[in-house]
Structures are given as structure tokens and as C-alpha cells.
Image (tube, rainbow, N blue to C red; front, side, top):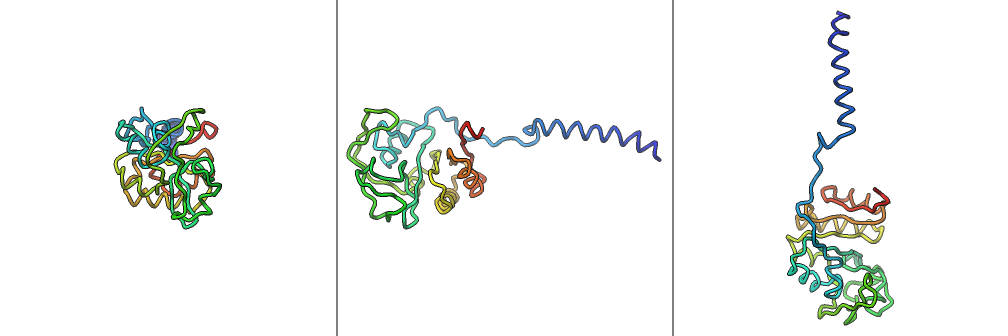
Length: 205
């Protein structure tokens, strides 16, 4: 009996150890990675901030008309818990009013200036007729099929959970991407909606 255990048991144990080692080194052999459904060759940063006022519905419409593959936008949350699309927390640069979004009710948010400097292209100005700060839900309603990269700026659980809820409400987990340069925030985002792909900084990688 002991000879049979040695004869059959040792090879089986060796095969098990070999397979386990291979799968640990190459987990993709067993678990295929999720692929984002769109090849992103054209990304509209802040909706295409160089062509329209950044992060406005008109900017997103213009980007869609240019056949963009991906909208990139930034989210903040107002004092009354509305998720809005804005790069800055303080609105001095965008509106001329020195107020913070998180301390302001949605109905009291000021409009953008008629022309806005493109921060990543110093000296360049963007113009447009849409000067309103939109709600994230409006973006989802108007662009249901457009992939969106959602950057979370603040370590705010309410913001993260409300964004996750809106993504699920509009059935767009497969075409919405979590983004944050803060690893702590990104971990919370992934916990809030694990079905969404995510982008991380090279420091995390």
C-alpha cells in the first residue's frame, strides 16, 4: 500500500506543484482579463477643453460629433449632495467667484466665464455659449452609449458612492472608467463598483 502511495502520490503531487507554480506566474491562463469594449484612439480631455468651455454639455456634444472614443471628465459634489462635473473644487478660475463647490448648493453655483484659459495650453482660450456646470446624471442621460473616464478628485465617500450608484442606474459599468491619482481614493472607487475598469498612475503601477 505504501509503495502504491509513493508510486502514484509523488507524481501527482509534483504535477500539482508544477501547475500551481505556472498559474501563479501566469494567472491570465486561468483568468482572462476584462477588455475595455472600445479602442481609445481619440480621448476628449474635459470634453475637449480646447474647443469648447471645459466640462460642459456643449463640450461633450462637440466631442461626440468629432467621433471621440472616450470622454474624460472630473466630478465634485455640492453641499446638497449633487454630483457635478467640474475640474476645480474652487470656482475662482472658472467663474470668477471665490467659492467652493462642496460648500455651495447646486442651484447657487455660478456660471462659467464667457472665455476660459485652457490650463494645459497656456495662452489659449476656449469659448462657447454653454456656461453651466452640469450634473453627472445629465451627462449619462444625454450620452448613454459614449464611454466616459470619470476622475474622482476628492476623498469623499458620499461622492464615490453616488457616482457608483449613477453608473449602475444607467447600466454603464462596462463603458465607465474609474480614475484617480490617489491610490486611497481608487481603492474606495473599486470597492464601490468592482465591475468598472479603472486607470491608475505610474507610481501605483
